Amino acid sequence: MRPEGPDSCRVEHVLESRLPLGERLRWSLAVRAVHRTVVAELFDNIERAATGRALPPARRPLRVRLFHRLRWERPRAVPLPAAAHLAQRAFSRTDFQDAWQMELLPGMPTEPEAWEGMLRGASFPVVGRAGGEILLGEDARPLDFRASILVADGRVTLGTVARLHHPAGRLYFALVRHLHPFMARTMLRRTHRRLALAAPSAGEREAARG
Image 1 (cartoon, helix red, strand yellow):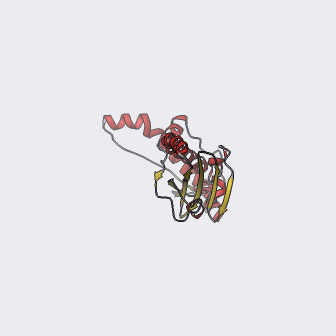
Image 2 (tube, rainbow, N blue to C red; image 1 turned 90 degrees about the vertical axis):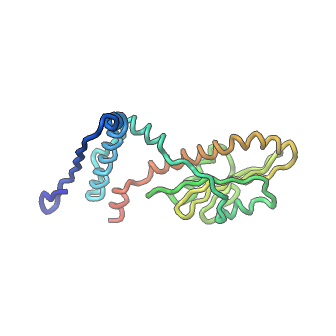
Image 3 (cartoon, rainbow, N blue to C red; image 1 turned 90 degrees about the horizontal axis):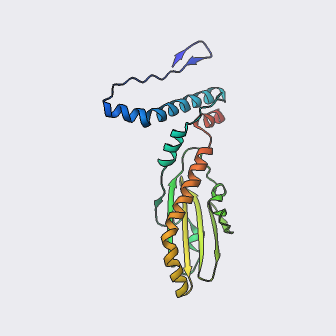
């Protein structure tokens, strides 16, 4: 960063390196495009923090968007949080429960309503709201189930609890439970990435604080 007067400065990024052949190939095929995009977005953040806007903002090339999608964090399996009170108390008897969790990134929404669309596409009605948790679900002949979206302590958790009714319900769920983890992880990861990309950038957050 070099001053260019009382109200302006020039910010430069210079990268010099000597790489062996294998590293040069990796740089050319993958790293260079990502590196350029990261630097361009850093410069946008600097401009937004200083002026409140970035004209024109950097756009991510198709290759970078593909890498970004493939490398996005994946949900991890966790015990159903104690803070998920609605899910914990949904049934007097629980035959199945699981939970998948992801860390919130800076600027992402902390209101559970922002995450509600994760499951509303499946037309599950909301059956409860309390604090940072929303509970969706329905009762059916083979089983009753509830899906909990909890946003707390810098994390979002998608939990599921189910109560099975009879042998036919257990047989049905024996098939469903193999597909359920994949669907839960996919919905959580897709929504997490969508909300992260829509969140204010570091420069926008800094400009807002200023």
